[in-house]
Amino acid sequence: MTTKTENKSPVFAGLNIVRFFKRFFIQTTIVIFLILALGFFELGRYAVYRSHPNLYTQDRASAVLHNISALIQLPKGTPTMAIINNASSAKKVQPFLANADDGDVLIVYKQAGEAILYRPSTNKLVSVGPIYKSRATQSTVASKVRQSTTRTTVPSQSSPASTTTTQHATTTKK
Image (cartoon, rainbow, N blue to C red; front, side, top):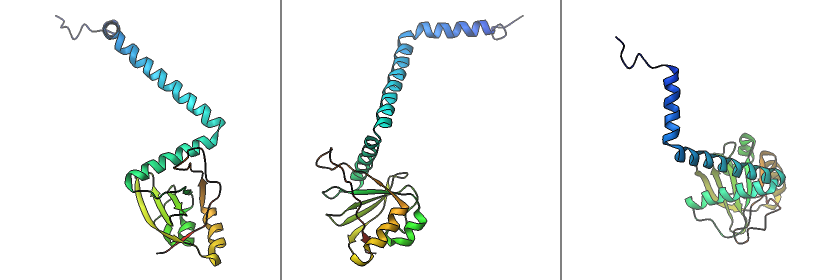
C-alpha cells in the first residue's frame, strides 16, 4: 500500500511548477516585466552618472538637503557641504565637530551664519550651531578641515542649475 505522499517524484514537482505558471502566467509576466524595466532604468542612471559625475554629487547633495529639511527648517541661501572623512583629525581642529563620525555631512550656511552636522546613516542631526569668522585662525582652520573633509557641490535652493564652487572656512562658537 502506498499513500499519495509516497508517490511524489521529481516529475510531479516539475508538473506543479508548470501548472503554477499556467495558472499565474499574466501575473508572472507582469512581475518579470517590472523587474526588467527597473533594471534598464538603473542601468541608464548608472551610465549618466558615470559620464557626468557632477550630476551624481548634485543629486546626492539634494537628497541630503531634502532629508534635513524634514528634520529642521533650513535657512535661505546656498550651503557649502563637506563629508567628514577623518573624524578624529576634524575633532581636534574644530570643537563643533566633537561628536562627528566618518561619513557625517557638515552643512554651512555662510549668509545665515549657521552650521549643521548631519548623520545620514541614522537620519539625525548631530549638532546645529551659529558660526563666526575669525580672520586670524581662518586660514589654518580651513586647511585642517579641508584635509579631513570632502567638499560636495550643492545646487542652490532657488535655482537648481547653480552650484557652489568654493568652500568657506568657518569656526563655530561652543
